Amino acid sequence: MPIRDRLQHGPVDGVRVGRFSRSINTTFVLYRWGDTLIDAGPPNQWKDVARFTAEKPPRQIILTHHHEDHAGNAARLAKKYDLTPFAPTEGQDKLSKGYAVPLIQRLIWGAPRPVKTASYPEDIRTDDGTRIVPVFTPGHAKDLHVLHIPEKGWLFSGDLYIARSIRYLRSDEDLPLLMSSIRKALTLDFDFIFCPHRGLVEDGKEMLRQKLANMVALCDQAQFLQREGKPLEEITTRLLGPEDAMSKFSRYNFSKRNLIAGALDVTDLSAT
Ligand SMILES: [Zn+2]
Image 1 (cartoon, helix red, strand yellow):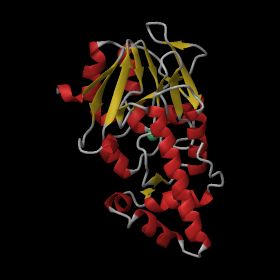
Image 2 (cartoon, protein in one colour):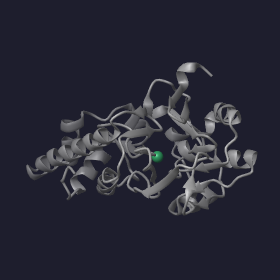
Image 3 (cartoon, helix red, strand yellow):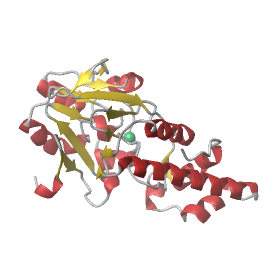
Image 4 (cartoon, helix red, strand yellow):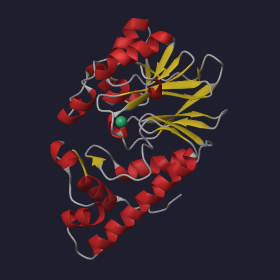
């Protein structure tokens, strides 16, 4: 594995894997803290994930949510290391029964295998005794939890952060709920983010605050144009430009118009 694909911050190390290496949205960072693994990585990256985890066999795996890039190898890791991954209660059904993955996501990440999980225990600790506290932050997914490390002021952000400004929304994402979850996360004490797509994020709380501010500004502009009588398509093009290949290829499952439609639904425009 090339050295450039490895990340390190304190006791945490990670590896960036992915089929297409150009964009943060098509690569995934698998983090490990001693024998604790955060998420399981995309199924089509199993070879690299297997090599990485073999260096330090995991005692526990904590899944942030059910999406295939995060939970895709959970079944194989569970079998290999004879463990039951921890997952949000809200996602356990999907994880155990499996679910349909849209074509474009299957192309980027592969298809996940069903996996039996256990709910997060009351007390989760790393091998050096540090407490990991899952915090429910739905919106991106119905089951997303971020993992807060109060003792260190760190946040494993699942898919809550990813970027300071967003230009697309999945059709199953709930923008008002996502924004209220960001507000909830901002009440936690942290300054460093471990993002599974962006990587290590210094000044993480400020970055997340800026993401919320950018979302609020977008909602504000979209709602202004709506009051002027502009239709959804026109508002989308004006604020985010025309839909591109990503939107079209995903059949608008991942699109700019989803984001604007969500922005028109947001009623809480507070930036904190
Ligand atoms: Zn996700």
